[in-house]
Length: 471
Image (cartoon, rainbow, N blue to C red; front, side, top):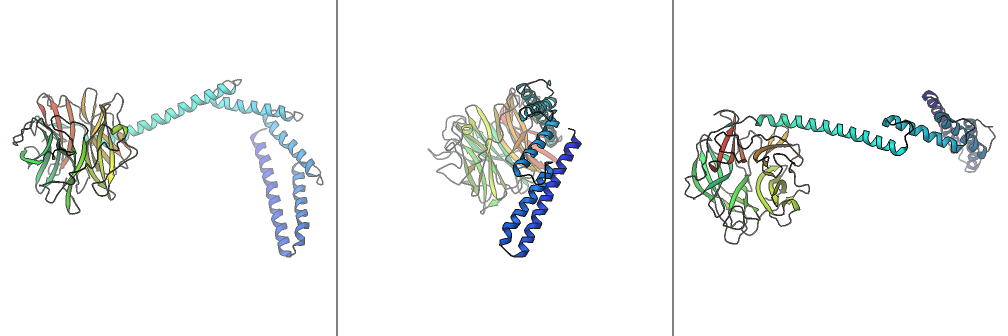
């Protein structure tokens, strides 16, 4: 039966149904108006008779036929309609009609799947599965291409850096602290002077020191900001300032400190023992200041984040924090380790001391075979127009590299597979091994981004600089 005839059959049945419905409504209204309950029984019979008459008409049987006869004729009509569509004859029984319907359905599925008309259901199912899988693959490929295009667009302003030829802070600065290497810059502004917290290692552990500058290139060391904790404390092995509470996290905003509860705040990474480099298990603490110069531990008894209660991905060591304020809560983006693998997660707080891990951690994960196949670490997060951007370092492909990711909601991140800056970018060998642990600031005076980073190569471990324009 062709489509037009089937449509006609369907329209006819709909018309019959509508007539029955209207008739029942009329009869009920009539009985309701009479107000005589006795009429319901008689009218019920009338309604049933009229329905039966309409059904008899639809079934092409006598108007006085009983329900059994109507049912038989209706079945015959249905069988004829279905059988005609399937290529059966009027004399075929239901078993024959059923087989022909199954054959017709199978034939149409075979056409859809691109299978042979005589294929069985197993073969048709396989062909449909292959077709669906191919379609899903096309969708995924298209989505990945679109995501790559977005990441290309978002990351473009932070590519093609110009390198400063040497360290801006030597591995052993003249700060009287006997550091043999420096690490983890955090650059911000106090009044008209740029500040840099940096981490120094003297063979015992980490301590945080300060350098200042007028031009972001020439830096003068000013001494210790915070040193080793008391013996037995969670930060006895030293502290490394990671993230401060800033007034704004817009990518081009001045990086100035913000007060909360009448104090400035930082989060720091720390270690429990002295005598080596990053002796596990690392943890995090919080510190406050009234003037941005003298800093005090918020707690000497327990860390703000540690391996206690950690998930599998972070069970061995908690590393550097990055502090951000958004939607009336604080966010701590941090990297952590399971064995030799590091990834990035996030925790939130409303009081700066009690932190709750996001159940979907880690939010930035390793890419097998990629530039971040071993580490996705030391995240720094900023607002860039209508989206968030993250600068982190990846370890893979023979070095540590500066990587890029973006997000709409701070929880779901997409990483660009290509580094913003690869290890070995400086031809002097300054960062031949590692280019990582960045601090990004924008200088409005010359419309230039300054990216400070820990450079490790032929000249030791110091603070390097790359800029978005030649300086």
